[in-house]
Image 1 (tube, helix red, strand yellow):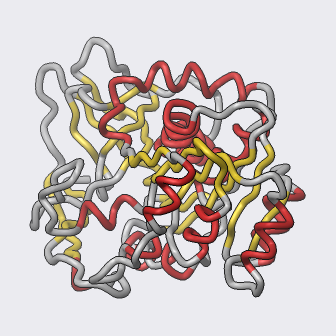
Image 2 (cartoon, rainbow, N blue to C red):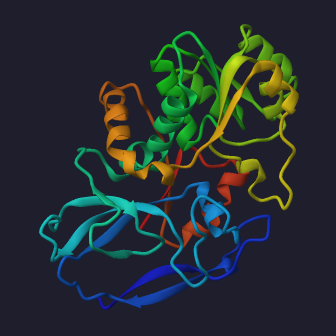
Image 3 (cartoon, helix red, strand yellow):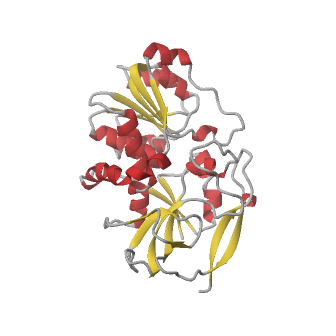
Length: 332
């Protein structure tokens, strides 16, 4: 093989669905491996809501946007197929930010070896960005206490499922907000959430009152949308709002207005947004926190796997429609 395929970002989205004209599939020459370098054959890529921010022209953000003409940014997992690096051997698995491409040339910076004897899908679904984000957001931002009540929006998504299961393992009452009855049934009967609310159903405020009779202490926000204000209205004094994502607004030119600041004052709420690039240096500590829950069988997952590199393009729209079931991955 003398060439491989990569997908470059060539145009910024302007709201609405992701379309093929935003990207260009290109053939690249297989690289020559220099001293201190190694070549990774990427096997699975992760699709994440953060990608919508990475494609935008906004330079006043937590990470620079993907430059037009560059390979689209993403995390993935693969196997080293050639190496001139003393610390990375042929046959070892690594994960990290490798982009939308079949092969990745690295000097080791930003990639981590995969030691856990789990399939690629499980690694990307639990130990990669979703699990790290859930662990950082819940424990270091949300600061959960046993007996409290937490509401997780996007609760059937890759981050929300792990947040809910970690919170349940810590002795919290866990309510998940999802977009279908099937997902509601799954998070309650398979993942162990105490209750679920389909945000497309009626009487949302009544459902919140029924499922959280003692109020809400933590909101782990992944989606936004109208139910957000209803949740904040029912938060207890000194509650914490962990703002992880707002998928409902990513395709909009003008974001939806948020909850009233009056409730923030009256309930003395703490609201904190966070993103994982600020905490990449803490990954070993976060994995040390997360791993015992996984090894004890307290974290279940399911993966939604798309086939082929170019399936990533239309696959991003599944975040808007809610049709993805579990962690969204692309198998190369």
